[in-house]
Image 1 (spheres, rainbow, N blue to C red):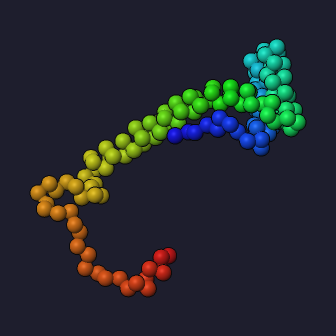
Image 2: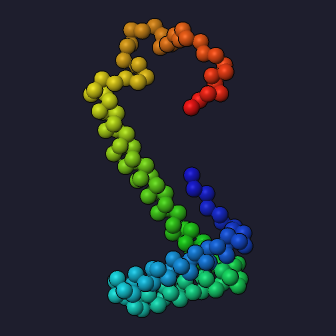
Image 3: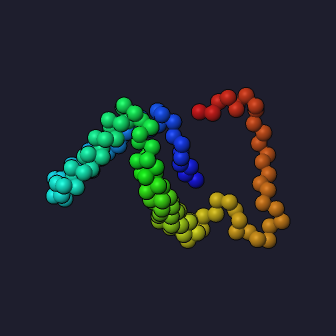
Length: 135
């Protein structure tokens, strides 16, 4: 679970201000040159400049902006992380399990329901000195 810092220390706000300066700068460039919105770009650049200057001069002035960005980014992060995990599970692990099942591979040896125990006896005893030779 993602736990946001609702009362960030001074150094965290300073780092946020410096990072926000660069992130808002890149967003402003994208708005200006890719999307063709010069007014929106200037607004975003102004917010980024404010964040950068305040991050260096008075980090606690960024507390409100920090909270706004955290409140906006937190739900997005939760949704995206769950979607990525779902895609990995249902897109990779489930088909892999189907292929293993269709090919008859049973690495846990669970297909024998009549077996009284799943214990696998091992007869070969290893010398404890071999534990140090793991390569």
